[in-house]
Length: 470
Image 1: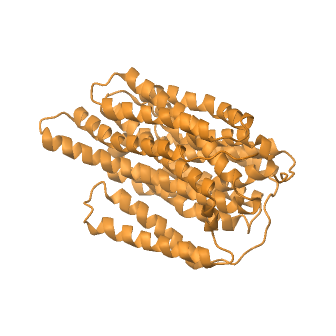
Image 2: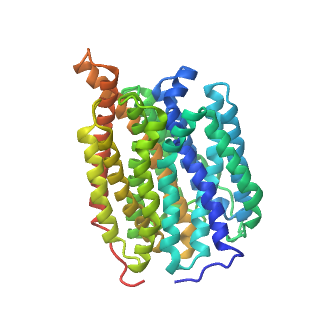
Image 3: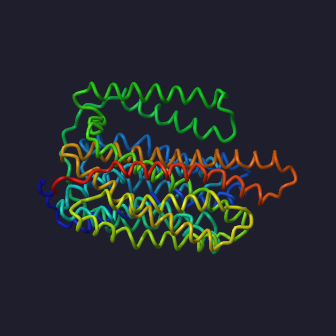
């Protein structure tokens, strides 16, 4: 396998990138614990409030495809500094927001910064470490990708209880300032600046495509499938994505080289990552609402209930990376093992959630769920990227990260849609039911879908092939 690119301090460089990405991904879901507070303060409904998460993810889904283009136009340092500054501006806007519109605007600006940092992290880490060290490094990077959005509600719960939801952004802004002051000078360039032509049509098609599909999914929470606000953007988005794909295959210098999907193990690994992120973000928005609304616990207690599962993921991610390295990059066994636990955890939620479910059972189910996720995500991602030649790293990272953000946005939107549908169904059958029972029924209804996705992850794990030689 090819040698890595030499930089002054690969570990410090990787740390700065991972820290920036961690803060951005943490911000994806940090407001989930505060949605009920924000709904009360700004007088908005759950489907509207969820745009604080869905909108963030939607911007990432739109921006990340452009990353493969950006890394060929700007140096690593320029992109990292720009990403951190935009993230800082967005966090400050959100912290100072006097109304919901400004809060959403701040989220969008912060998402633009995060959308620059994440793909740069993926590309740089692959280039500055040798292949025999990638398992541990990608394990830590996988820790960032999965733990940051998962632990967001937990940490936010403590912040909200002690201070207010605005302080989530003040604290995030402080971290961005520290990274800008101490980390930006440590960035060495790792990309080849070729300055390819700007294909405006590709950018427009990808923006309309991903934007249309995610918007349609989000509108399903309050509207029927036959409603124009659902099917029109869905159709427009799908047509735009088809045209985008056709155009990329015909271009000599595509925005994203979709030929990476001709490599079977990259495609399969990306699918598993997509399904995994979808379940993480769906659970991430449902459980805080369930814990606070149905079990009537405080934000701090809700955070404590989710903490053990997140802790398991933090502990296991680098361990799984080490196991992956020691096995010579054999991902199949690890992914299958993890997928079984993901299914078990999701099924416990789907079968037992109610207004009277004991808190210990939620804790156990969440631990089992994230125990499995730890074994699924890193080996799938590393195996997928290891199957690509170096010249496809930027394209592969852009394609995978784009679909990861689409998965997060789709998971959030679908979860809220099914949550709302479950509540309506419960109230139709139980008109005298309590609010806590209604919220629990909505959450349980949505977890049936998550359990189904978990089964698909297990089926996909059976198709993973180990490399014949490392």
